[in-house]
Image 1: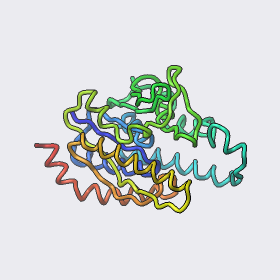
Image 2: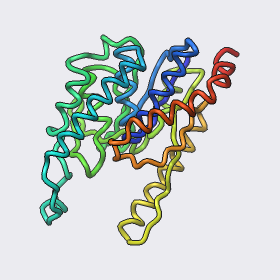
Image 3: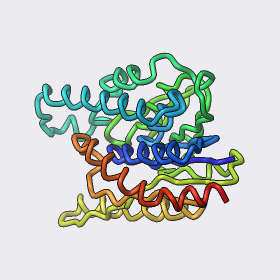
Image 4: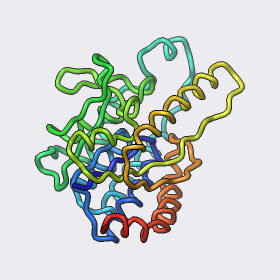
Length: 260
């Protein structure tokens, strides 16, 4: 059973579409896909449509609509209310984007087994969602702490799956996958000049250790050296094109591995 784990990472998630493209070029289909945050978006779209081209088309169109809406909004003014409230944005602002991607489709309607990973803030553990509506599961997996308020799945408050499982390989192993392929990218450790920036740097260091631990479970990894910030969605096309070049460089190696 071939499992494919897709890493969390905002716009970097477009690199996963390059991974799926190479899977298709090698006539290989994953039996099960796991994904956190942006990885859950790509994974859910592929599980629903079964085509990397459709995944790119739908995801890119959603990003363009998001960027257009952001350009029409006034610049936020940082004030005390913004600092002390639960999150910078309400999920209601972004739910419609996810609804346009997934509509009312359920896990029972998809073509490939899918494990969407979120973070349960009541048990402090990762939580695998594999039933119900895709839009609810993916939204939960993409709820970045501090940026969005928590969402609910089955009455439980959830946050971004990347909190504890940025590359959900262990979830694939628990499901029974005996061959695990990871789609991952370089973890950038940002420099710091202030105490606030130091907090971000420390967080990045901690995540890099989690990532390395999860990658130790992978039998093959598509690794993308992406220097783009995860929030820079305007560069989605650049991320995908560069990732496709990298993925095709290891295409023969991957095909030899998967056919062994």
